[in-house]
Amino acid sequence: MQTIFHGRHFINLEDFTKEEVDTMIEVSLDLKRKFAMGVDTPYLQNKTMFLMFFEQSTRTRNSMEAGIAQLGGHANYLDSSSMQVAHGETAKDTGVILSRFGHAIAARYCNWGVGNKYLNELAKWSTAPVMNLQCDLYHPFQALADLMTMKEKVGDLKRVKVSIIWAYAESHKKPISVPVSQILLFPRYGMDVVLAHPKGWELPDWVIDQAKVNATRYGGTVTITNNEAEAYAGADIVIPKNWGSWVNDQTGATLVGASKVVDDKLMAQKSWKCTEAKMATADKDVMYMHALPADRDNEVENSVIDGPHSIVYDEAENRIHTAKAVMTLLMGGR
Ligand code: CP
Image (tube, rainbow, N blue to C red):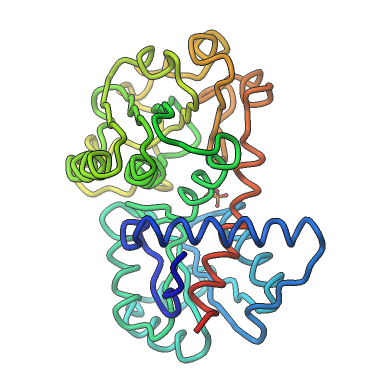
């Protein structure tokens, strides 16, 4: 177990050693157990954090707000459109001031080519920890909750086949940050990770290269394929989820909130949907995961997401336990 977290930023899980990630999971499990038993956990009394959102959220916002309240602290929810950032105030000025007012700043900013840079600029100037609530590149809170859920359900994850599968959706162009964080993290636990997507929905080469480095170091594998059937075949865990094509958006156009979501290139991939028939080719005890919100009927059949293989609600619940763990370690401690 590691203990040196106080004051650190939480932008990318790659900034933390595997032992440190293990500690985050141990603390999450401890907090989950205490929550179930009604044991108070006032580890962040009188601490304030600021939650800046440039985009919508259900799980992330509420896991942070409820989480810090349960730890005895307080969160200020900040809609970026009502902040001076909407008038061009810089990340430097925002970071300096908010960190003088409180004990942490967290932000969700998913615009392609902008969000991660903004978070790093905040972190450069903030004297308090900066936490990533999802940017264009990473969603560390989601990946941590996914890891916790898989460890709870399976135990030792070595050589467990987990398939991250692109899925068709029309709801909005989603960032690549969930699959990126997952493909970087899961090989660190010795998993056999398969990434499947149609041509045009690749993750950046540097992500795949780093995932393979992680696999080599920790004894897992990383396989990239355009063959959806290969990903489902014999899988222990499947994570079919949409992400936007940054390859088709080289102009730097935003991936979030874009007005035209469905185009011919996307429509041609409508068959990439998680169905009962595809699930039947996986391991008999296969688990279906999704970060949510899911685009039901497009990404997945209702009978799958509501069926016996789905663990999406346990996965979503773990967002609050992992959020509390990260806040406690970074804002509390020594
Ligand atoms: N999975 C996730 O981040 O959910 P929200 O967008 O609702 O926060």
